Amino acid sequence: MKPFQTNPEETVMNAQARYFHRDNLPPIDEIYTQADLDATPWYYSMEMEPGKLTPGQAFANIGLTRTLLRRADLNGQNCLDIGTMEGLIPILMRRQGARDVTGYDRPSALTSRIASVKKRFDVDFDFVSGFPLAELPANVGRRTFDVIVISGVLYHLYSPLAGLAVARGLLRNGGLMIVETAAIIADEPAMHWNSANRFLGNSYFYPSVACLDYFARFLHMEVIDCTYLEWGTIDGLRIARVAFTCRAVKDVPGDPGDHFLEGTLHTEVDVAEHLDWKRCLSTLPPVAYEAPSSRTLRHQLLPLRALRRATRNVGLKALSNRIDDAIGNRPASYWLRSDCRSLDLARFCTQAKQQHVSDRDSQLWHSDTA
Image (cartoon, rainbow, N blue to C red; front, side, top):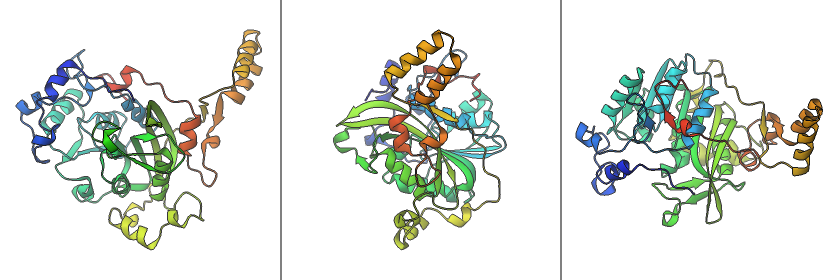
């Protein structure tokens, strides 16, 4: 797995930053002074001065989240970003027409930095912090949202399913949730523990994509879109950053014979600790979303690729296009599970082509609108 890019100046600041060191953690409700902020590295690369980016970390997975966010119709919607850091996602949400946006992060340390970011990008949104994720519903008035983004968060949680359930309880039926996380590309539903720090960083679990698929459906969400980027292998496991869009629905998407998925006495009691299904009920129309109508296959047969080029070179464009359809693309229905209209994440991340992410995708410039 490739290490994240760092900046020499950032390395120096990391040695001084309090929040990033376990031996000197401030209370989560403490707001940093300017002196503290000067010693705290930026998470995002943002154009806080004309033509100059902050020395944030070039996380390519930011591009995955942005890609899916662009496909959602945020005009007039009420949105929430969980794990907002300096507020890159709320800025994009507002610039895509969101009516109200709330950004949440557990520490309050970056409150004044976020105020500077809002002023620089001339964007307003609410920032709530200083409490655990489990207390977020109470701190937003137990209301629901139309669109929720939870990006780069799940693997930082002791219980990823509990955290996802808290987020689901804040999403109205018909709304959208965009989840981005580190994951294992495998068709076996499993959670992989970060033993001996093999996954690096402050991670607990890396779920398999099949596990994420099941989590989503267990929490009454249909997966309607996905994109991913592989990072390499660790202990024989294929590591990736995976982003997927879910639509909240009333009923469980999946095999009606799977009684555990449908819910048991014990699972419903446990789920009720994190969300109230009745609060998610909504008469509002579904949030519009434009997923691609077809996807390019990851691997294509070389002889047919050669035939496609040959037919195009001699002017047989129609035939070449038919060959393209046969070997290069699959319709949206191809990627669905066999038992419901929900995307099969394991099949998608195994067979579909991964996304290319440019440097620009991991940065926020003043002129960016999405």
